Length: 294
Image 1 (cartoon, helix red, strand yellow):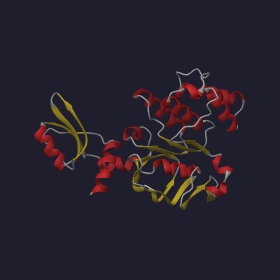
Image 2 (tube, one colour):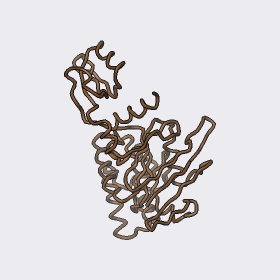
Image 3 (cartoon, helix red, strand yellow):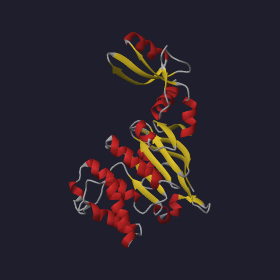
Image 4 (spheres, rainbow, N blue to C red):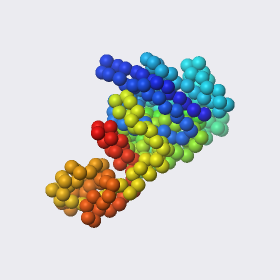
């Protein structure tokens, strides 16, 4: 099973949202990572069929190896999708449970299977909601979680999720990410995020996007291997910290007891007493964009 974006281009008056984007999404969690406005949400809309590209095409290859353009698959392709868009427009006259019941019915779930799935999604994604609250009364954050639940219902084999962890506290992020990982096995999952820490909880592979272009794409093992032995933690006074900023790529910075605490990428020990650290996706993100600027 594959979802193939081939030379996708989309432009607006402000410039190119996507510039000849090509990539084959395989089963697993692929995270589109980049700053706001880099084309992540536009790509998800095009993959879902909600938006047409100016040029290029999206192809879907099913489990039998039959590959066709998604517009030719039509409704059969749309039935494979669970889509959480950037902007939510749930039906305001429904209660939370009624909306999920309605989505489950559209997905072909009935009776006990439907009740079980709706209850499961409510308990994981909206545990504070009894289910009888009108959707129009939900906060923006709760609507986002409801939109995620609607995308997941029916266990579609392709999930396109725009910022599924946005607005969650650390505990809830970890819990929702764990659930997403558990339901993603064997599925093609494409997630848009501008937060490396969020992507780190989810990604099997990461695609770095900048101004509509794909900078790089690699599985987790590759970017971890590239940074192995090159990430360091150190403390320094202001003068030493300034010197480190000039000589090394600083990926994080803070203060502790009046001293600067830096996380840097360096091929060898950057200063005496620096401690080696495990690579993070934030480090890989900083390195990818630093390479592009260079």
